[in-house]
Image 1 (cartoon, rainbow, N blue to C red):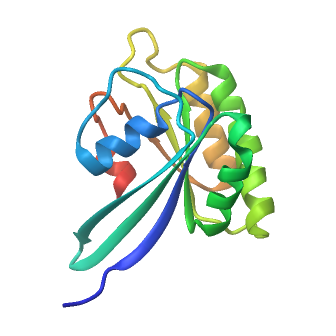
Image 2: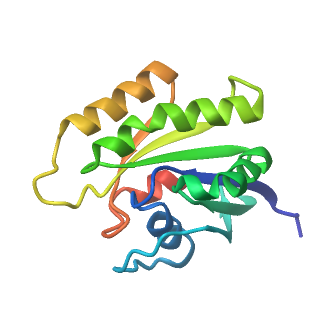
Length: 162
């Protein structure tokens, strides 16, 4: 049996944007209604994609500044990053540039695999707002892929996983 390729991915973003919810949907196909700030958690999911066995080690980072040391360690050991913002939170989209620069500085490279995810697209009144446009602009400027999703309804969340 072929050993899986291990991919270490860090989920990054401000507090309350849905990083843990996206991770739990991917790993367990479940959504938790109650928000509880994350210090740092790691999860594992094995799957086969195009006949290749993969093991995702997902590092769910804390959005709060109090846990910067843990987050920096996760950044060092991660091979790819998912930058998450909430479409109802201007501060979270504005923080993407800071998170990206911090990742590039820690990785000492400007060629780090990243994806930008606009989360909470299920919220009423948040369709096509300026925060989504700003997130897309960052993705264009930084040559990254961009996905809109909802961890709650799991709409387009499979695209995040691919």
